[in-house]
Amino acid sequence: MEGLQPSDILIHIVNVLVLFLLLRAILIKPISRFLSARSERIANQLKDAETQKAAALELKAEYEQHIESYEKDGRDIIRDSQAKASQEAAAIVKEARSQAEQLIIDANVRISNEKAQAIAQARTEVALLATEIAARILKREVSVVDNKAVADDFFRQDETR
Image 1 (cartoon, rainbow, N blue to C red):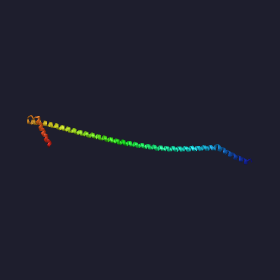
Image 2 (cartoon, one colour):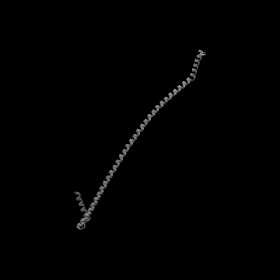
Image 3 (cartoon, rainbow, N blue to C red):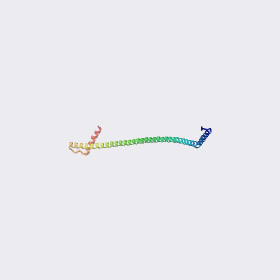
Image 4 (tube, rainbow, N blue to C red):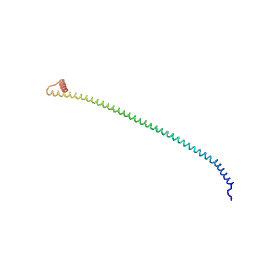
């Protein structure tokens, strides 16, 4: 039988060892280097991603802080504007009240003046009517001076009552 001879087995073992060494030299070392480089690249990319993530979180925190600051400034501006508007409204109301009071005072003065004029005019008219009535009763002429004296005397007596 042609079988396996120990020399054939030895040749096959040597061939397998040579093939292993050749494959190792040709394929395994470059593939190992490639895989190592790839692992390093992935590790570096993960490290960069972590760094970028941390930077992004920092920026996010900073932006949130800026937003809070701007919102606070906005609320302060609104509060200040409302306070200023309230002060201006109070000043306008105060000025309007002052003008209304002045108008009332002016109206009261005008009323008093018109009342005094009306009373004086009424006195004059009453005096003239009284003179006419007295003249008709007495059938004689009464002078203006007499008329004035009688009217003044009547009103003095009227005021003392």
